Image 1 (tube, one colour):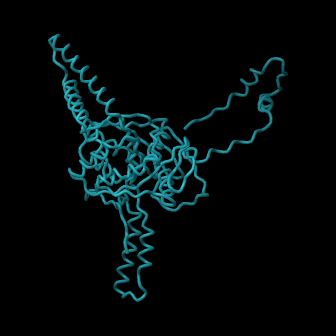
Image 2 (cartoon, rainbow, N blue to C red):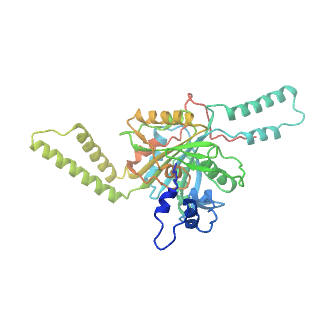
Length: 403
């Protein structure tokens, strides 16, 4: 948190400009230098803090004038054929895309209301008791620790929305564009924390930006960025992090690299490693194991890119953790760090850059952290966890009630 310190009144008195009579006391000096009292400036609106210009019915508009499209994505258990289909769709993406995972406590009030409305008046006593028991169970699920609602979203510029939707549908995923009140609820939930639900738009909200966290109202959030990536990613790599049962927003920003540029860069790196290898052999030394592995990876990836099987992307991963108090936030941070440390990855703290980290996990298609890592298509396809959770974590996911 930034703290301001007022100057010493005695120093102000000693530095009084020449040609003007020095006041008798330091307090008089402060009053004379301050001049007429100015009205305090009002705090900036929350929309300015969150880089949001305004919200249209079919998409938000950032401060830079870019209109976005937000779509909810639904998938099934990932297997090799579906993983290959998703990788093929990523190969066709040549514009910036944000993939967002939100995991927060569920809001089941709508389901309870529909359950009540669907009950006929002449319902037998035993059936009515069972329906009441189900209603109480839904109420308990909302407040029980470890019960979370997990949802997936894709964000891109509004002009490319139809193209992205067609690519995701071709990969076997369900895509549902958000608009109206649903879109507004999602944006408020991402900015203020919690699950999408109706909020009092006139209620005041205080935002306090600290060194390593942000206090929004009575909740604490902390944003982290994946600085060191694991060398290899297994399918459903983020599934373990999601299964930890922590409320979080996880965002992956993608930017496609042109194939010609990627092939030239890989060829240059291959030549550089081969030159270093030749020089080492002339000196009677062998290459380090790290350099040999890097040469093999560059050679393999160059061949795959030239054959059109792979494509390179600029990628950035940020995660925002939500908690009610500092102790819980510290525990969630340790769990997230442990997950990536197990695969030789490392999460950066983003000290003094918490606002940039939070903006990167909002559905605005904006990587405010501005740190990128180059990944290939296969790694990205394994990264995003469209699959349902395992049995170790109870998560309400893609829940659609039907009556």
